[in-house]
Image (tube, rainbow, N blue to C red):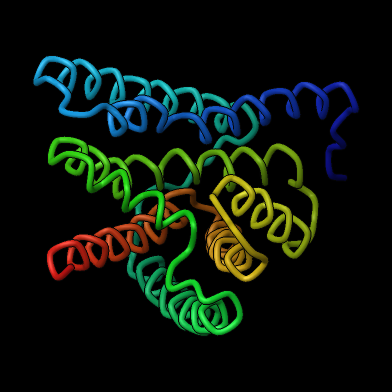
Length: 231
């Protein structure tokens, strides 16, 4: 018989989840503050950068503790089957993103999402900020967001549910934490969140969804940098 989660436990986990979402939303605050300072000094960039990385590190550490409190994952590491699933899932999202991006431009005349637009503005602020953002977007964000929106959310609230419900809720909350200016833009991030949830549930490894998220962010960041060079 599957163990039922008490209402009190759900309440406690909800408070923790809200705290984790708050951290995900505001973890970029130090770098955002730096980006709006005109001609920042080297000292302010170094101090701000260190604070940013330390804050991000503590956020990941806290999310990892939260995840381990609701699920003791026994299988770790990535095998060939995991990598093949990551590749297939990325191709699927890439196709979905192309279709939705085309509709976004057709309906709302937006060439990119509001989230990507805001990121590009920060990247243009300063070379140091550009390096910090590219690094954290590629390596830190996938770890933090997967621990929160896949690991803790799914295992903490939906351990006994069929996949569709946690996929939908995880995708919805994931998209809600990204800047969106219209429903199509919202669907782009929601579809990514749902695909990330699918690969996590299928392989029961947080490393698989982190790997897919890393691949997506690596390609997206690379394309942004190319766009900056061309533009």
